[in-house]
Length: 239
Ligand SMILES: Nc1ncnc2c1ncn2[C@@H]1O[C@H](COP(=O)(O)OP(=O)(O)OP(=O)(O)O)[C@@H](O)[C@H]1O
Ligand SMILES: [Mg+2]
Image: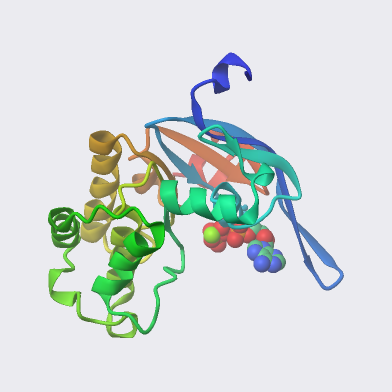
């Protein structure tokens, strides 16, 4: 058992470190990040470009290995799992919204959303839920379009639908409103908050938009690969 504060943690990062090597140059993207997120919490992560937010997203989702520290997701330390076990945990428990969407170019929007279900092996189809989220996201008339035939904002909404379709325990979203106008941002943020409240999903959302960040129960500020106090986040203070 860990300390009292982390006993009910659903996501826990302990002293996470990550350095990228580009030729002879080293970039310390994460320099010791520790925090925990409780089950059912909606946490926003903000910070300037290059502060390590996407790197953190990849580590929390078990998509990249840390150089130091650990990630514990629902009681399982990711680094202690085999690749196959980690992949399985990811498919069963996490819905990802990638900053660059990662939609499959040859599939239409409908298949891009439904493929998440096939991959997860979660079985339980819920056509009503599919209809509900695609309708709320304004995608109903675009389901037959491939990504190249969709606007950036539409692709982003398809990516969100794909992340939510399995009703995952955890939603990790990297700039889910980065390509949206304010009206569609509200729709996306409202949907994240709704699935957080109704389904008890734990949500960790990265954003550089202070208005979007307010949808979270709590805001984590990052700067230069570390967590800082809000008053140490110059972008934030300036607003
Ligand atoms: N694959 C990579 N190889 C080398 N350096 C990388 C790689 N990915 C990120 N970096 C560097 O690591 C640092 C953190 O990058 P990261 O993508 O995590 O930032 P971010 O906070 O998500 O930025 P943004 O708001 O622009 O998306 C940056 O300095 C970046 O240049
Ligand atoms: Mg990023």
